[in-house]
Image 1: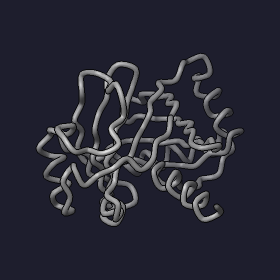
Image 2: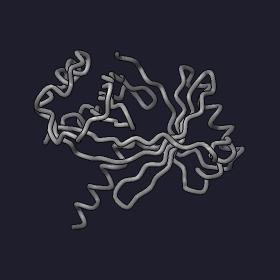
Image 3: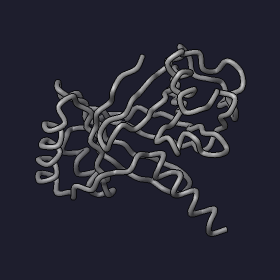
Image 4: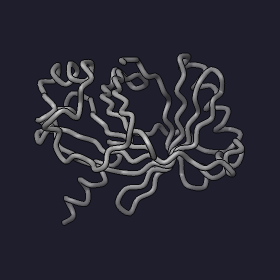
Length: 198
C-alpha cells in the first residue's frame, strides 16, 4: 500500500533523550526492537533518486519498504508486510523476496529490478512510541558500528501542529531544535568516514 508519510525529525543528545523519555512517562516502557537493512545498487541508484529500500525485522514479522523523499517533511512510502521474520537477511535480492506490485513499480521507475540490489547497511533501533491521537510521537535510539544516536520523530497529517508541539517539548525539556538527517544518511556517512580513514 502506498501512502505519503509526513514527519518532523529532531536530533537529540543522550541527555536530552533521557530527559524527554522520562518526562513523557516512557522510562518503564520496553522499547520495540527492530533490525533494519538497507539495499541499493552498486552504483547507488536509489540514493541518487532520494529513495531507499529497507528490510525491517521485528520479533515475529518483517516488512519491505520503499521510501522516496518528496521534500524535507514528506516521503512516498510503499510497504510489503511479511507474516514472519526472515530466517536470514538476503545479501542480494535476486529471487522472489519482493512481490508487492507497488514496490516493484517504484523500483522500475528509478531503473532498477530487485536483482540489481544488494544489502548496503544494517543497524538496530530501539523505539518508544506514544500515540497522541492526532499523531505518533517516536523516540529512537539507533545503534551502528560503535555509534549510538538519538532522535525524536513526530508523524502527523498537520505538520504545523507537529512543529508547534515539538517546539513546546523543546522548551519544556530543554533541547535544541536540530533537524535530524534520515537514519540511512547518518549510517552511510559513518561508514563512508570509516572507509576514508582506512
